[in-house]
Figure 1 (cartoon, rainbow, N blue to C red):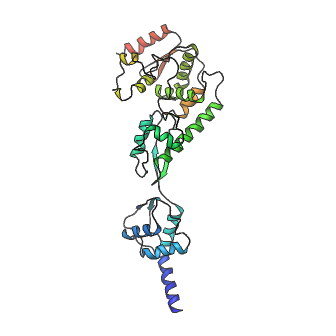
Figure 2: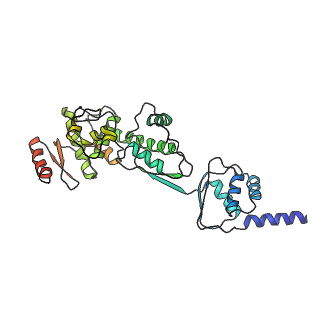
Figure 3: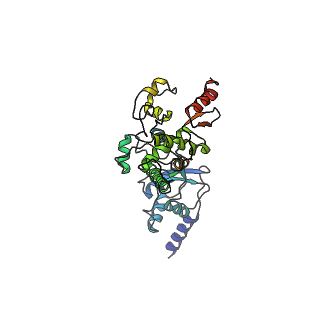
Length: 320
C-alpha cells in the first residue's frame, strides 16, 4: 500500500509538473508516421519532456497512444505532460499558408507550392498531365482550373491536397456562375466561359473595367471578328517570350494566337478570379468593339475603327 501510494503520488506529480521550454515560443514538427514513443524521445532530447518512457505509457493507458496527429506545433508556455498529450492528440497545430494570385499561370502556382515550407512536395517530379491524373481529371488541361485564394495547411500535408481543394473551389465557382449567367451568351459550355474569364483577367487589373472588356470580346465573337488579344499570343509563345511583343509574334500562328485564329483559344491562359468569372458571364451591354490603353491603368473603348484609330493616336502614338 505504501508503494502504491508513493508511486501514485509520483505519477500525479509527473502529470501536473511543467518542464521549462528551451525557447519561447518553442516550435517542433511531428512528421507523418511518427509514433508516440518517437515524439516523446524527440521532445526529451529538446528538454521539453522528462521521462519519455512514462510519457509513452501515460498515452497508452489513457487510450491516446495511437491518436497522435502530425503537423507543426507551437508552445507559447510550458505545459504539463498531460496537457501536452492533449495538444498532440487533438491536432492543435499551427497552420501555414500558400497564396495563388489571380492571373497566375499553372507554372507559377507550382512554383509557389514548391517554395512553401512544410508541404509534402509530391508533385515536383510530375508533369502537368500526371498531376491531373492524380487529381482524377486525366482529360483536363490544368491551366485556369484552380481558384486563386489563400490556402492554409498543416505541416506534412501533400501539395496534391492543396491542388485538390483549389480545383474543387474553382469548379464550384464556375458551376454557380454558369447557372446564373446572362441569357444569349455565345458560349457552348462552361469551359468556354472559363477561357474567356482568363483572358479578361489578363487584359485588365481594374475591376470596374472587366464587364466592358467582356462586352467587347462578346461582341467580337458574335460577329465572327478575331479577338486579337495580346495575352493569348504571349501565352502561346511560352518561354520564348522575352517581355517584348513584336509584330512577327502577332503573325506567327499558334493555337493561342487570336490574331491568326478565330474564336477562343483551346484552354484558359491563366487563373481567373471571381470578378473575371462574373464579368465573362455578365458582360456589359455595349456597342464597343475596340479598346486601347490610356496609360493610366484604364482603357478607352470605341464602337468604330475610326474612333479606335483616333484613340490610338491620342493615347499611344502621341505618348511615344
